[in-house]
Image (cartoon, rainbow, N blue to C red; front, side):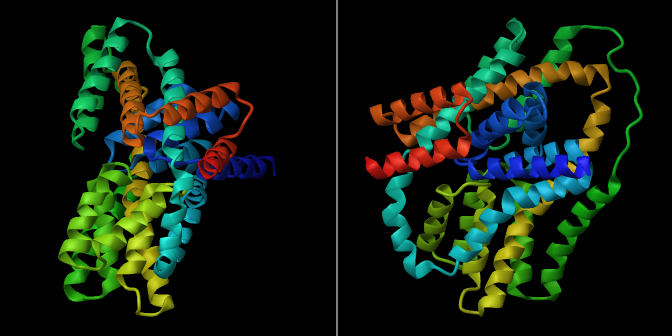
Length: 391
């Protein structure tokens, strides 16, 4: 009973994270740091950044994989699956509903001014996250150098491949700089192959079945599953692929309809990959309620499934790999690089929001409120929306 209570408390905290998770994966990490680390102590800062770095190397939604990995740490695969559902299901269901509401999307656009302070608020979350991480991982000149180099490199080059390469290089540099004998001690590694085989079978099977069963829902699952394993980072990264296939090639929806849905998801809490539910529903609109709901849910599940199967496979292996001394040493460099990535994200997001006095004030107030540790993240989000309405 106590264990069940602990799991239910954890899932409640995951739900609170989902309510405050605006602004993409980098801002989501700030929410996880505030709620799961600082307030509830489910893990420490080093463990969180370690998971962020691990998930950044893997294809799929980084923030979703990170919180699922935390669920795996807390209670194994079953709790990890429940974590995924609590984290992503609310916004997936909402985006499914919004795929029916195209005739009133103009209303949502008119009210979008209320969300204009969400961007700078998210910057505040990231700045606090970067500061807390820096205190933990920047221990010497090497980690400082990796932190700054990663920040500069990822500010200049934003290509998808840069992020995993920089993280891996941080680990390699840390190992080389240590020059300590006996680093590659042998450990027994347990591979949960069932998850990897499921990942591969679904990848091959979904690509094959559409050749013999030409059904729109099967096409949608195959497309979104493919997006899920080809993309590193967050929802922003997958947009060019979606536009190319869903709008230009298959013409499932117009570019205007696509952008309306993408604009809506920017103002909703939760993972941005949930946009897939809207796109999937819009792709078959007019074919009946059941068909549209099915298409939306299949698309939503399809894009998340590869990343979740990969984290189920990789997380237990990672726990064994960490017993190797060289791997533990590499984490110093990887964590420092991850801190640099998050620091750069705060600058880029502030630039995207617009460097105005209003935005700078919102960033500063968000930092002060988070630093006080007295106001929950969802309350800060509500205050930002109210301020947007008033201003």
